[in-house]
Amino acid sequence: MNKKKSFLGLYLIIAFVMIVTAVIVSLTAGINLGIDVGGGTQFEVVVTPESGSVTNKFVQKQEDIIKDVLKDNGLYAEKIFVQDKDSHVFVVVRIADDNITNRAEIVDDLVSALEIEEEAVSEFSIISGSLTKKSVIWASVAIVCILLAVFVFGWIRYKLMSGLTLTFSVLLALMLSVALHIITRLPITFNSIIIMLCSAVLILFALIFVLEKVREISKSKSSENMEVAEIISTAKKRTLLPLICLVAMIFVMAVVFVFIPVTYVQLTACSVIVCLASIAYTYYFIAVSLHEKLLEIKDATEKARLSRDNSPAPQQKKAVRPKSAKKLEPKKAKKAEDNKIEV
Image 1 (tube, rainbow, N blue to C red):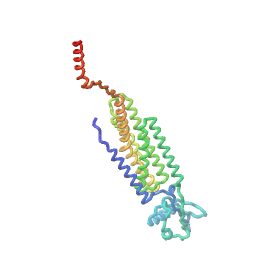
Image 2 (image 1 turned 180 degrees about the vertical axis):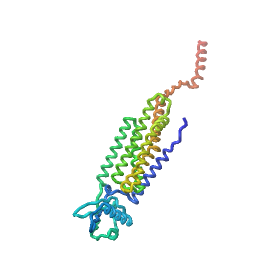
Image 3 (image 1 turned 45 degrees about the horizontal axis):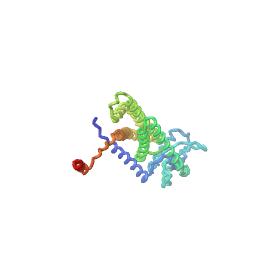
Image 4 (image 1 turned 90 degrees about the vertical axis):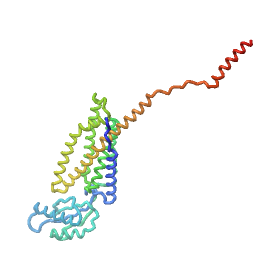
């Protein structure tokens, strides 16, 4: 069989470049963390009208004005919600930025745009997120334990090389998902973190699907004359259509949600699309080819070991008498005959 040229090294280099780019972006521009993860700034605005009742339409109009004012000042309101207290209606605004330097200008713009008193805008307060040193440590420990469990499962079920493939692919998919979020400046929130974990589960499911097919083909009689690459290629072809249908369905749903005029929903849909891209790249270009390469290395190593074990022992060479001995023997025999004659 003619072996197809492998571009595994190139694809690994591209993945490595994306991860390094994300590290550089995070060190220079920082990571765009959501309020629930990284904390930020919060302030309240009293929007109770002087006369008349508060309607949803009125509150929505006030919220839109607040968003426009923040946008003009280079800020984005990640969360806006309404609270009723002390017979007043407050619009609570949360921004994923704890270092706002132009607070006075923002307050003046809000007072002018909403036609309210300056006292109606509360002071800007810092709110903390859930991203602490302790939470990062525990999250890292949890990820390591999950990867270890994936490796042990793959080793027991499909042998060592499959365990390595599963572990590396899940880790790479997670790293690429985070890297693409950092590069595209999408906010990392609880929703996006859950989506990243789901993407790791999805690629694990896809690879297990392929490995089960490889195991099924390997046990059949038709695989007796097939090489490793042929078995894996056949399994990949048989599982590709169901996986494409699943990913396409999720992608179409995400694209539909992108066009919903709610920022929170749009960002979540964008996170889904980014994670799908990382899954598709890891699975199609790296994971299956890596598994094939590892199995080929294993087979080559086993064949080399068996050839060494079965090779015949070197034959012992016959002892060769020195030439001098051969030359002396006739002389000794002749001398012995002369002595007999003399006697």
